[in-house]
Amino acid sequence: MSYIYSTINHIGLVINNILSRFIRIFYTTPIVKSTLTKYGKNLLIIGPIIKLDKNIKIFIGDNCFLSTHMEIKANNNNINEL
Image 1 (tube, one colour):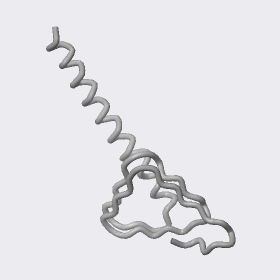
Image 2 (cartoon, helix red, strand yellow):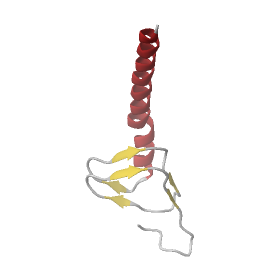
Image 3 (cartoon, rainbow, N blue to C red):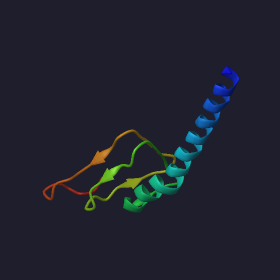
Image 4 (cartoon, one colour):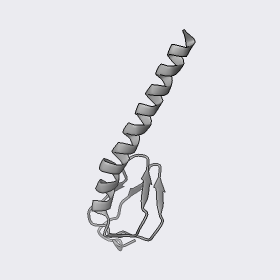
């Protein structure tokens, strides 16, 4: 009986990993890349969607890894380029 539960658990973990990678590749990464002004090769985004204000210019270099919660905001009085 425990063999059945173990098999169901492993199948669930595989499905969870497949769905999380699918969402990251086809949903999260394109949304973040569309808000960036310029980004390099091998941009890897793990975790929740990064929130960016529309009036900020961000340039990210090659081989960058963005993880966890990240929020970037700027006032109109500040220099809006990072």
